[in-house]
Length: 350
Image (cartoon, rainbow, N blue to C red):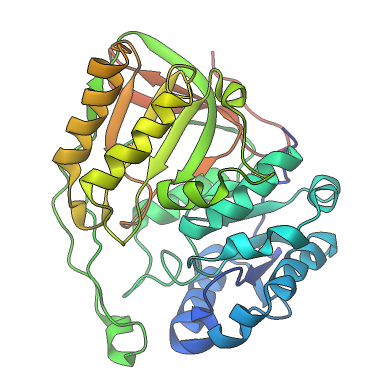
């Protein structure tokens, strides 16, 4: 994988709207995210050409959304691209994505949820991208950014060192909904829920593999497109998955995971990590389904599985770099990213 350059205070970064036009329709929330990016990390924040267009305009212009990405990649003054928010139709940008432009202009790209579509474009181009928070979510967090999130961004995007062990967030998590368009809400800290810890469902010893995955619903959109990956491309990977705020039913979760079993993907991966569901809903049913399919039906009782992790649609989250090697230690119950995700001088682990 080609690794982008790390960020430094003073760098210019660009925000982009590849799906839903929340940044244009709710300018209050966008400005909060932009302000906190500038103040917390010392970045210069600009917008891509159409980043602040209305949702109605962006819906009608998927080509313009993709062109924003291509143009910003080619802009040498921009050091990173930050997704404003997800949505449900980044898939409509695929006909206009040029993989060679991504390959020739590697730079940090971060986002989650529907942004999974664009991450797979980067992966197909052989460039590391980052499954993490977005402008309107973690960067615009009510009442100021969470310290776990700030530490994650500094560790992952501002350093070329090996990332190392990722620890669970012990301060709590939230998915409380406070309307973004209400000015006073921006000053109200959301209610935190007590963390229950990551769950190591099965596995033994140490397993390593490169990271690949995304939002489970959005990965379904990608199947049978030219940007999906073959079963053999999953060999040895640590698969990461999480579900959206739509709160996927346990039945749908079971059907999708059975598809991964039937396609042979589950038998090829070296580990599976799962993000905490929105509102922590259905977690027990999801865990039971994973054990039913992976252990009981497929006989993969040695495949390491961790669930309830701090990535996905609850906040705050840690960031997962695509194509970078990670490690699951089932004995010590740890998860680590054991390779640098960005280019530059790094400190090797011994």
